[in-house]
Amino acid sequence: MQVVLLRVGIDTGSGGIHGPLFRDGSFEFVPIWDESGVNPQTYGNTSDRKHSRKLLDYFREGLRERRRNTRLHDDPEFKTFTYGDPTPPKRGLRKLERRDLLVFYAGLAGWDYPCDPALYIIGYFEVEKAGLATDFSPSEIRKNFGRNFHVRHRVVFDNQQKRLVLVKGSEKSRLLKKAERLSVLGKDKRGSPIHVLSPKMRKVFGDFDGHISIQRSPPRWVYSGFVDKAARFVWSLR
Image 1 (tube, rainbow, N blue to C red):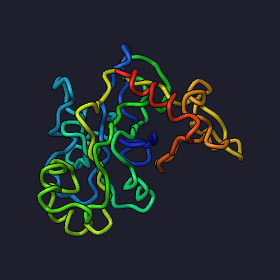
Image 2 (cartoon, rainbow, N blue to C red; image 1 turned 60 degrees about the horizontal axis):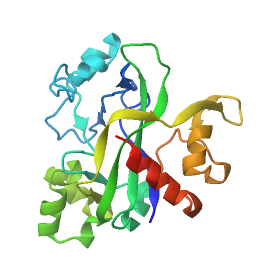
Image 3 (cartoon, rainbow, N blue to C red; image 1 turned 30 degrees about the vertical axis):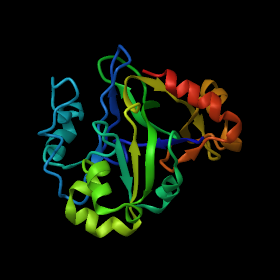
Image 4 (spheres, one colour; image 1 turned 120 degrees about the vertical axis):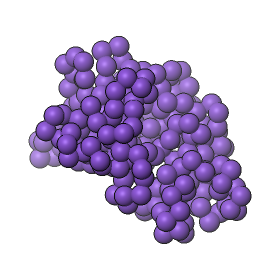
């Protein structure tokens, strides 16, 4: 069994904000933007999970008009539990096997109360299948990955198919109701602030041989000695 941590969702470098974290521990997962421009969903026309506001409302006032018609790259999607990525850093995810755990985390900051930005676990897939798109037949692609951003937009799929990694989660996968904090603020070698794995979470996931910065998005594969503990912890999250 393997457990992998992967950063997803909007952030200050790709969208301009952190996702909103609410006082009760719940949150809203806000996707990054769609650079291909093919998705009809935008921050201005897409509602949050509670359908009480548009995703655009979570942007600070100075960004709202700029982002109103910005299209969404809604991946991962948590309705049929699919994730896709054509970039080299994610290529290793094709090796995930049934019952492995792909754990998603995102940058969140307090929305209705003061809470500094941090990284939080927001959901996970219990892997059902994974591979390159070329590993699957057209019927398998439609059946298992039809709602994924990279598949449902034909022009995107045709362009990325040969390098596209796809992951399908089982029905045991979930988008959490409440976020689980993963990071604390540390410093890099130059003394600049960075998000690092918290001491509490190092006891769960290990310290990746001292490489505890989790600010960027390359997958972080949990070492074998921590896999069982990490899996039990992830399964406990709701």
